[in-house]
Image (cartoon, rainbow over all chains, first blue to last red; front, side, top):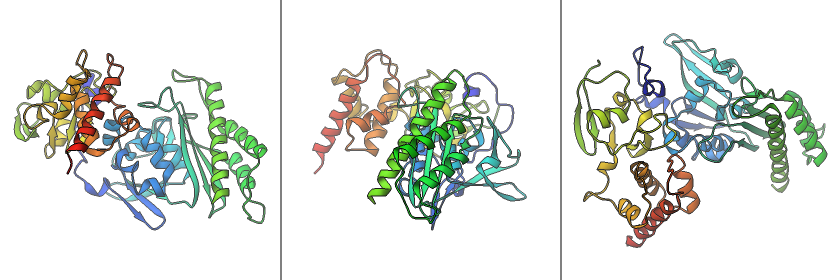
Amino acid sequence: MVAVNHGHPMTSDVVSLDRVDEIRGLTLDGDVVRIGGAATWTLIADEPVRSTVPALAQAARTVGSPQIRNAGTIGGNIATASPAGDSLGVLAALDATVEVRSASCTRLMAIPDVIIGPKVTSLEADELIVAVHVPVVRGWQSYAKVGVRNAMVIATVGVATVVNEEARSVSFGLTSVGPTPLRCPDAEVAACEAFWTLDGTPRTPTARDIGHIAELVMEGAQPIDDHRSSVEYRRHSVGVLAARHLRTAARTLREQ
Amino acid sequence: MSKPYQLHVNGQTLDVPDPVPGESLMTVLRERLGLRGTKTACSEGECGSCSVLVDGELMCSCLVMAAAVTDRAITTVEGLGDDGISDIQRAFVECGAVQCGFCTPGLIVAAHALLDRHPDATTDTVREELAGNLCRCTGYGRIIDAIHSVAIARRGDRP
């Protein structure tokens, strides 16, 4: 639409999916939230996502403005595959599955199999994102974002952290610090060892643990210098956000 | 050229003759239907000057393809208020929330959406909900005052 407004004529026919209700809503089915590809950020920022997948609701609330959140969709975020897509780090950290459909078949794909480069996906021209399946995880999760101001801002850095008490695992999904949303395997192993002993008993990570894990998250980032920020600032911010998340997670889980 | 279609704007069904494929709701409202209250500024969703309600939801009309909303109820700034001027419009005037006035129609529409959704809006809610409307003159203080005064008046009106 922006390209048309700026004088680029529409070159092909357009099919509006506005009236396809099946892909606009979301349903909570046991331990999975099935979010339609055309579900808006306004819908995702509210209940039931807010209490079942809080990190995703938080990410939704940071997208654009009310006007943008009423129009923008999660399927659009995935298909655009911007390195700064706010939902993408969260979906990567949660191991969400993308349901992709064409006239001939349905594919269930992991986020890294869909988003394969900056603004590049593996989707075929005849395929449509009909839904995203997001697991409901018991434990703690959050999305934090750095930008030049609070409103209407594209992420300079985004960090999603998920502490999964059932699987006894910790995952990080990084936004805007790599060509695609990134996970941090080394940091995740270290965090797992900091939150549980070898026999699976919960423990509270020490300040030293948290510092070490944050260092590993910083090493896992692959930031670049561009018009929005620098390598140094982005790497530093990733560490700050990850450490903040880990401290809050540790405190929250201890107090439960 | 694409097929003519109709839009439901401010309670009326209007013909859109000779539409250009892919043109925005903003362009159709202003250039084809003569509703110039909806303002054109950034044309990329950043400024909110072209805000309208689509089935009651606040949208930037520059980002909506007009032909995709033929079955939806569109409300522009011209369609707010029963007797030509709404309580929010009056409050903007009384509180001095208008300077150059270019952003005002978009802000008025956004304020209607905001108070419909959050009748008990706090200052923080008002600021967050107006994040999509840029004003380069007022510094926003009097706009927020105006919206607050309406919220209070509406609460007082309730039985």
